Image 1 (spheres, rainbow, N blue to C red):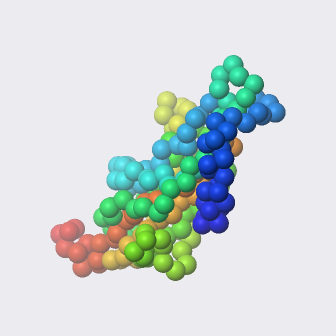
Image 2: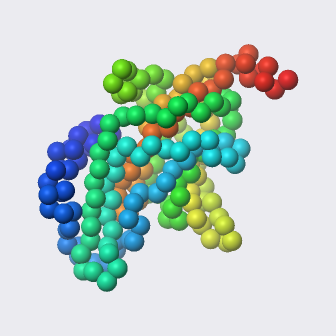
Image 3: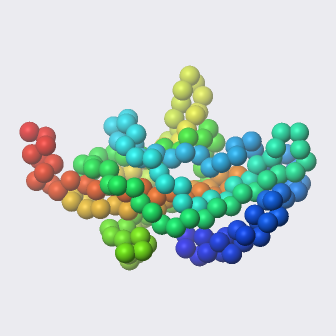
Length: 185
C-alpha cells in the first residue's frame, strides 16, 4: 500500500491543476462519486466508522462525454480502539451494491510515533457476503475473526471496485482473557 500511495502522492498536484477532467472511451464509469462508506460491525452493530485514508475514484457526470477521476492521499491515522471479544465474528461492511473486486485486510499489533504500522502485517482471512434489503443487495460484508486475546489490531483495509481503489483504517482491541471472563459473569 505504501508504494501505491507514494506514487499517487506525486500525481496529486498535477491532477488538481488539470481540474481532474479526463476523457473516457465509453459509458463504463458509474455515478458513484466517492468510495463507499465502510464500518466495523460486531453482532449486527456498527462499532466504528473506517477512516478513508486514500483513494483514486472515477465516475461520469450524467449527460457528459467526460469522466472525472479524483485521487486523494492522506497520512496514517487510526480511530480509538473498539473493544471486542476475541474469536467473535466481526465484519467490515462496504455500503455499495456492487461487490468489491478485491479486499485485503492486514492487521498490525503496534504503530510507531508517526502512526505507521510496525512490522509485517498479518493477513486476516475473510469471507465476502452480500447484505440484502427488500430482496436487493445494498452492501457487502468482509467477515472475519480476531483470534488473539488482549491485543491491538490496527487494520489497514485496501479495496478495489470498477471505479477505483480505496484504503481504510480501523482499530480494535480484544479484551484480556480474564477481563472477558469476568464481563460474562
